[in-house]
Amino acid sequence: MKRPILIISIFFILLAGCHNTQSNSEVVEESNEEKNISLIEKLLTEADNKNVDFMDEVCAPDYKYYFPSNSEPINLEEHKAFWKGFNQAFPDLKHSIEDIYAKDDIVVARLTVRGTLQNEFAGVPPKGQQIEAGQILIIRFKNNKIVELREEADLLGFYQQLGMELKLKENK
Image (cartoon, rainbow, N blue to C red):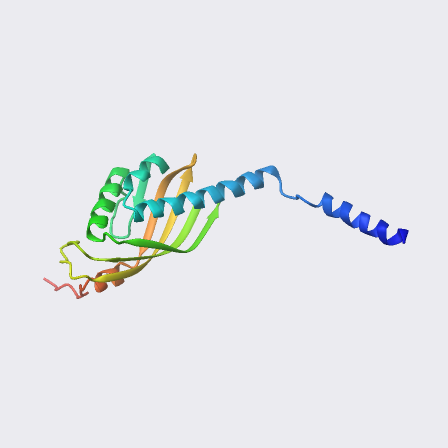
């Protein structure tokens, strides 16, 4: 009877000794990654709720936004103005996070955005067009603030859903 108790006691002592093998720096890193993911989830929720001013709280003063059709990044105020126009054209716009990952100071999110064109956008008149497009965001943090957001989006699919066509340029 003493032998099973001894074996069980040794097992629990070993288990307790192996309880936490992570270093303090790994624990801090993990909590920063979770914090960054939560911040991006909150940012997208606020964007869906038309609160673009929330960006002032989470973005650094030297924030840069990179979008596929822009050759140069835009700053925070320009990005907020872009979002206000987008929200006006698509007042029911919603983001769905399909996947989100964090490593160190980078968060990568794969999204689906859905909405209905209810006001003119890029010269396209509203006819109730429903859009659904994929997006990938790569967000870099520094000192707990977003300093860079890079977006890749299915712009061709987006514009086709609005009723636009792709055609070859005429040679001159």
